[in-house]
Length: 304
Image (tube, rainbow, N blue to C red; front, top):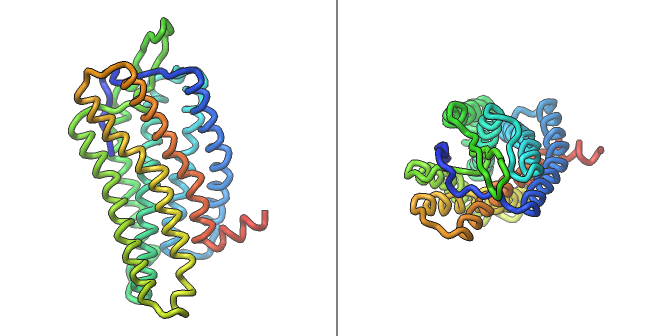
């Protein structure tokens, strides 16, 4: 996770009017779709009689997604005003703080769901002692605490910068898109994506190997659900999280080198915004995960 704070202007580029309207529209669409889906998930999981480890992780994922998309209106305002931040320093810090907390919590809860399914399929009896809801709640509490404390420096660092692009006085909220180009930022970003991606990849390879070793009757009861979960979580990671972190690494590395042409600065700034926007797609993808993994969510959705 990149927790560094940008002190210089970096690769700031306000972007064109069309670009800003594109991102504002994208955030509005994601907000409109994801809010009701995640609200339904929260209602279902809070009222569910099942206290399985899977439901605990799904509930926390829904909470993270809900908090995640609730800060999107701030980004809509920013882009609707053509990359001008009108809400002041405190809101800028809080938006960055909440956005990245819930981004990384979402990633790690998806990873927990993958590991939980690995235990359920590979060790259906022995894994029950580990897959207790109490243990899942402890894991979730640890993740929330670690990620939150990691992001605390954002709340105590200056985040707004004034610019005069094309003669227009605007205030940029650094924490929305900019990052510092330090070695620490590079390493933390690489580690942040490598751990969950490696864990999920290994988990799913082991699940597929276990399915291959099952008899037809054994495989029939779990294969369809397992394959759907694998596909959904991998697609979510590949679409939402991997591009963001790969571009972040490129962005940080180029930031360290400096001496870039204007078109490179604009390209890096646009890529930064685009991949950051793609992370929000998880708020739409994750309800599909609830639909296939949680029968009570599926029943509630079908009754609407």
